[in-house]
Image (cartoon, rainbow, N blue to C red; front, top):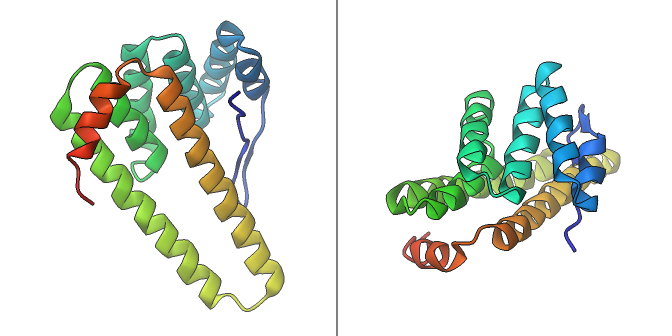
Length: 168
């Protein structure tokens, strides 16, 4: 069973019915929820939700369109690059898949280093605890995303082969 974690950052909480619809397997309702977010100018979350929903509906070209929109909004989000890597695998675009996967690994490493640096510089235990919560949520979301990707892309053997060529 895949659990959809709410996206939490210090000042923003992404909480909607989309999560519930996805957990229930009601992908059409989840798609409507994502479309509503986009129409309400919540582009990052709306396009991201729609991209994930489209993967469950096996609409990989739609997912790629949405991921391209998300990437314009936040080019340094590791989630985008991981999903793009797997979507490119589905279409057998090996070089694009490798590029996206390498970018995912690079950004993921930067995020980890950034959290560690921030924790060392923070003096207050309360602030450190907040950083650990954000870091843990980020890691859980990435781990969950990897589960989603592995369970929904039918080209996982192809992706494993492509990604095994990437040396980090």
